[in-house]
Length: 308
Image (cartoon, rainbow, N blue to C red; front, side, top):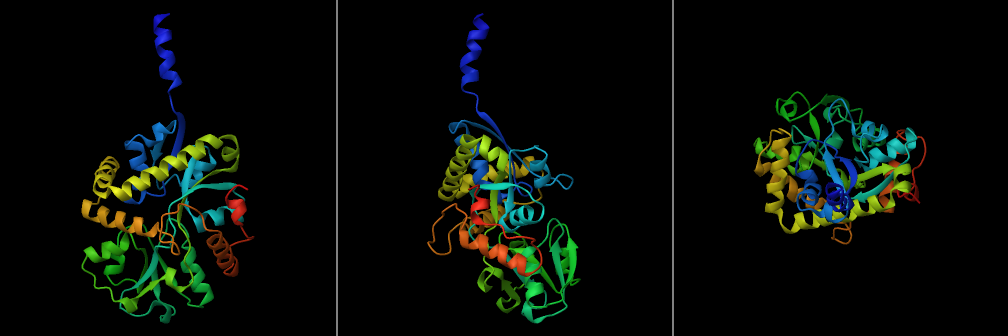
């Protein structure tokens, strides 16, 4: 009887389970979530959060669709694709990215949009929506060369250009001492393609049945990111813990550069502040560009994306 009575307080304070899958392997791109976990912010919000990373055999959407996780991370255009083409019923519960990180780097220092028919290296993990949109709208006739990781294919001269993100491969190229000339860079955000990327999504059914959990996760995650912005070196200590546990081949210098850029991309292009929100104009832009390029069957609206 005494043992049973002693267990009651422990059960009363147990957090609600919440399984979250990031978009990629462990890295500073997800620093705020790691911070929220390690600093106890999720626990304070009444949640027992487990952070997992996807694998080559189990994508984020597969895990979400099969209830292997409660929430998953997608770029805005990927979420629009899933909703508009595959009929997925998703709701955005938290948004970090406020800007596009994508750019094209020319191997030869030439303007990428003046090189029709060139061979372009792109990740094979998911469609590169912006690149396909540019290819269609400008009739570029690019030839895709798919790769899984690192920048060796590009550095070897096997392709004419490479699609990179400003917080990862861009710095890999700099670390490899590749001399990037501004005229050989095409930053999508500067040419009418500025569309938000990483956000956290749940299935609509979960959103409607677990309103307290999704609100608590969003609030604690925001707290984690704000703490990371104020304490970047301490946040990096936490990131490196996850990196080592996930056996990711990287280093602290690279992760510091990544965190700095991720935090910069979180600032709203108009207000200059971290607003952690989905912008209605960017949802509309994403749907319009994808529909114009034949990549989307129907428009996905802001209200739909937000579960309204």
